[in-house]
Image (tube, rainbow, N blue to C red; front, side):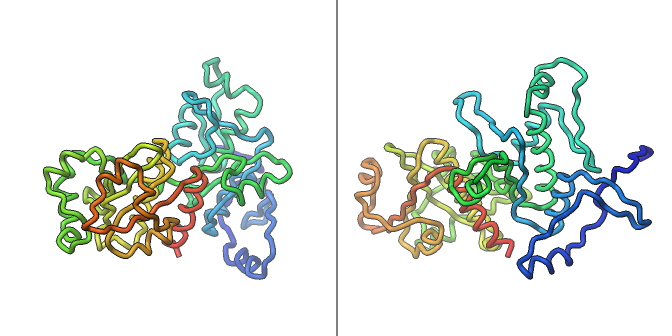
Length: 341
């Protein structure tokens, strides 16, 4: 591009097979930030960018960055710490502070001015944190599923990877892209999707008029304008929520879309203060059992839902209690790995 970067280089090739051969012997690969060009010249390579490039090349599930000042993002409305960011959130954060990662691995930061954003960047740790977020985005865009940013403290890595709450910031890919709240224009598509299951007796009949009346409680997963999955969420008193009408088009059932829809509805439930989610069905519930649900009695339902329970239909009830977002993150990683394998 006409710029002489002197002895600073960037990764052009990753010896993936050699790395995997070492991993197969249960050894650890240590990478240096010095790279050798085809002509034999030695260049310095940004270590964070190198890590992101290699992680993407070997299809790593996670990448971990250590940040001297740690990371602490806070929700300005609730003052609660934010430990989880989606790709879209991280992109907006970097855009807000005009932070970019050059295709060759350089962090580009604008400090020529005195705007509120630039003042934040000058505070201790802020710029370093945003740079780590930037390199995390590079890794995610290269195919890594999750990026963790931690403070280099004793036990931090173990706590982050092996406890539900963790201790750092987790950035994960937008696996829920394509899911949105339904509107009246989706009524016909939802009806066509669930109709075969209604006729088979698996689902309770839902005429279009009923769907239109309750449409704000439905969510759809679309692909190229086609509704390939749907689900309904109803909130009840006492921190309960019901997930119903969870249906995936038979041609798309092996792509993890049912798990994505379930995970999306569970996250919505948690955001609404409902930690206990339940489903009702007359059919086998093995799929839900594999995802942490367990059978309960009618007495376990909130009172208002007990009053609506159809005893003639004799639906089985399965319930799951969500501990927190990290609990959902762990489940999400499990099923996304199942899909990719």
